[in-house]
Image (cartoon, rainbow over all chains, first blue to last red; front, top):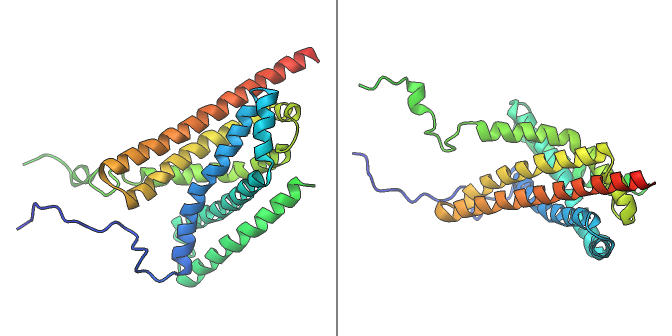
Length: 129
Length: 132
């Protein structure tokens, strides 16, 4: 007979018991970068608001946005954006049921990680030209 | 006997409650963002660090203003709906609902603030253009 009592099921990813693998780590990184980017967005939108407000307020926020702290936030956000970008494309590829065997999936993980570093460096070079 | 088709009985009973709608929306917005992000990064990257006048001059132009508005609107919806998935993995019940509401609210506050700033810069740009 069906039990009416609700079953206490564990919440999904059992991070504690899984051995770290390329596929799981690159998936978790997608989540971390997707959420982490919000810090850069907050600083950027604050900076936009300041530019639209007054010279005094702009100088205050611009000093933060262009300080070592701002550089760190924006550089990490840029890295996060590119990683999430490549990982997102990887998901679009997988959605079409292509490149899903473990070897290729792991290779795509490496492409996301190395690619995000390369694209971040390229972006920084291009915008400073 | 209930005169319902099997399909009708099944709709809404899955784990998501809304079928593949969320997944499809995330894919569609991801493609939109993929097209916009590289150009937008270039515009923002080359404007960051410039004096206020130059920042206003950039964002009061049609292309940077519209592109930034689109990236913020689509990006913040993509963010808010994306956070739902990890919240569902780690929190349930009232905590889960509260976290989802908080994330959606944060996204909308950022969106509204950015649109306000853009609108005002376009307006200032118009005034400066009219004077110069």
